[in-house]
Image 1 (cartoon, rainbow, N blue to C red):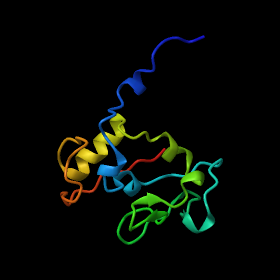
Image 2 (cartoon, one colour):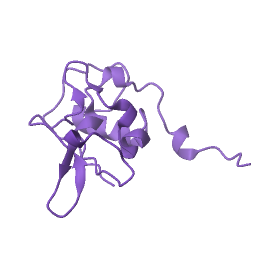
Image 3 (cartoon, one colour):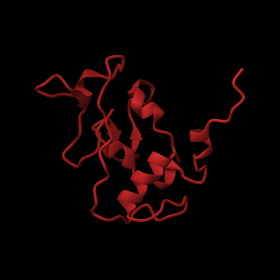
Image 4 (cartoon, one colour):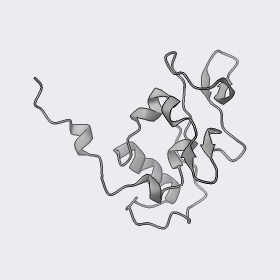
Length: 122
């Protein structure tokens, strides 16, 4: 039995919450893997065979409800979305890029810079 602590899990900041965000992670480019099973209308197929989650004109994944900023296919979301943990170093980095400052849990989620987050692909 492995009793070593998970160093990545220890770096998750529990003070960071999706409820104080603008679904920043849903602006990242998500490359689909063969075992992902997302609805066909969400797939953007590129000329060389690459498949990604489709984005709307606003830059957000088209699977995101614009009123609630929640995933409409949460149970069918791609594996990479499942692995992108709330409060993880990657999450905090993207929020810092979007809000142009560190990501405390109580920041004002309605003000942000015009900077786009870095793309995330696998």
